[in-house]
Image (cartoon, rainbow, N blue to C red; front, side, top):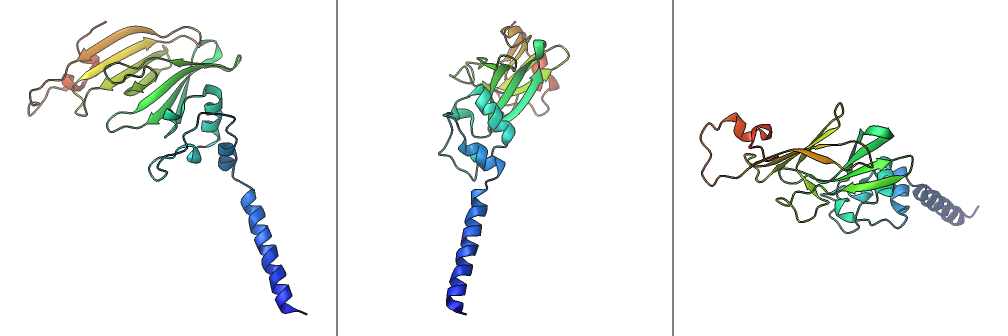
Length: 205
């Protein structure tokens, strides 16, 4: 037998098998290549951000449904909450931030496959009304959305807004707004607890 020829054939077969194995992509890889014209983030630090290359099938599914822009692709962690008439509130984390995250918020109606982005950005934190900067909580029992936005990392000033949600068609209604201005004086050694409790800040609305 020509062992040189046999070795060459063996190497060729191994190479072909490996290539075939590489062609069978994981669901994550398959999803990322099937972008269907989406506005996707492509140039980013993959050591720092998960980005589209690190998304799971749920994230890709919501990207297709909501079609948010690439500015929110760095993390794209998804939370969903039930609204009336079998619709949903969808929360997409864009970036975690130094002391508070930035989100995009949408309502979604699965029956009509209709998504609507909520423009609840506070002008004190961003010039882009799509960017909701702060910590978000949602109470399922009364469909109330609370947004606590800090003006600085200490957490002693900022705004607190509460919206009444209904369904994917009805716009959110602002039912409570509280604000506390940042003091230029140093914090006392033992600051009072209410200084950091947004529910006890001065009521604006």
